[in-house]
Length: 554
Image (tube, rainbow, N blue to C red; front, side, top):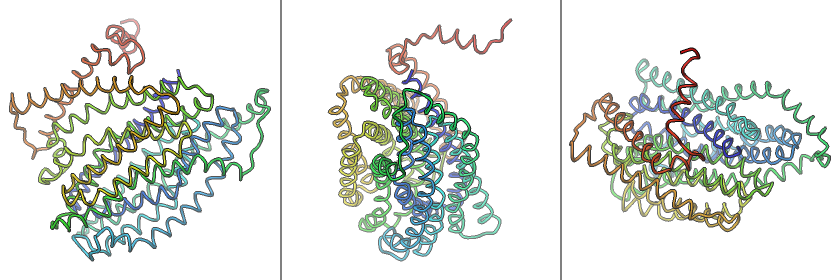
């Protein structure tokens, strides 16, 4: 039952995140068309340092609050959970204001570093400083809404968090599309004006999300007060004592600070690329670095992060459930939940990785401008990294759940150090593939270290897990090879990548056929039984669907 609840919460968060990213993709196409690769690069220059400062501003407290609440809720101590939430809101507002001022003041030196010490490449130093300072204003609101989402996740109410996330994204998308169109097509302003408004959308959308969360918090308040009252009336909870604010903060930061390193170090991967990409390409003797960076950091990263949300959703849910199980010392449950999360993630992600690699030209041309010669090549190289990004989120969440945050910080620091050391030399030698390779090296070091720590701490049997993952991998490699040979050698299909409808139909049909065959193969090999946790019977499934869909009397 707990496995089922964990997966339900995970998929609620995941579906919400995927929908949010799909909505986010809506603005990408018109925005990319309006501002070009240079505008996309300028947009990314603002968002990368902004994400770093968001991590510094939140200090891991949102997930720390979720974990803190889940632990005390498991003990029935709802009063401490709610007191923690209330006391952190004001603190996060103060931290957000501080970080906003810090990023505003540091905008100039960051801008010079991004442009490799140059006054201008395609974008100039004034434009880069401006976008960083505009987006800094969102730091005032975002930490507060992050804590509110952590509160609802801790109380296992992910639907409220997801709703706020979707409305936030929808507001941002509409603001970007409308403002960009008006500025460039109606008022005939340069592209960087549209980018200024695009980065300002972060603040506008955050304010909308705050009001959504605040309204739902007011609705949940009566039920919360009832839970607190019942906790005190329960005779088994006579040992509950009201904690002081200082004691709460001490324990909260014990959970939150290691989590902040997770968020911060994850963001540093892209930040290292931002700071070194242009410089490395200048050393290569190439002057088109901003066009390539805009494709790599904006366009391809948007596509890659859609399947990565599966790993993020499973990781966020794992923290809550593993924290509860670890508090009660249910190690067998933890092992089962770890296997379930990793197998489910791998099962869902692998077919999409294969499809992005096989039909990389069609996928890129459907979403973006087919004339960009770098897009499909970068997608081909970057697609396999999706599974590493997912496993990084999940394994780091596992270590947070079993209170091994100190070792998590060490494993992540080791990964980011390798990324930093090898990034610039590899970009100079291999171009954008060097940035991808250094990311792979860093992620592998962290993931393998996390697996080793998990095996040592809770005696997790990785042999069983690896065997299951290998079966899924082999199925996808065989299917992918067949599809590649069938499409490009046997039939030699030449579809029109200049036509988005042609790309959609061709890739869509292949995706549908691939997924049907994938599910059938997994069904006959028993993989679906393992993923679903029970015997999968097609006849029973069909009869169940009929009972649910056909009205009585027919």
